[in-house]
Image (cartoon, rainbow, N blue to C red; front, side, top):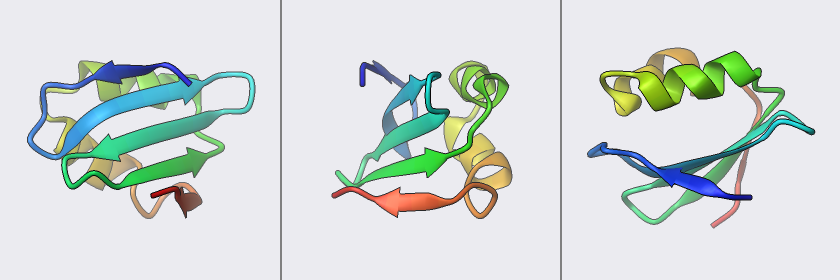
Length: 70
């Protein structure tokens, strides 16, 4: 999955696979998580958010099922 770098103090990069609606986030800690059943509009909003970390906390974390990858 190709990831885009984010200008964020919390999230290093974000990737999205529209075929399976999976959002993959790499955090500045080095941890990587995959979030499932994420609509394309949420991915687009994350990329354009003023604060990716705040958008993540308010609109992704605890909303979509997740898997810790590393």
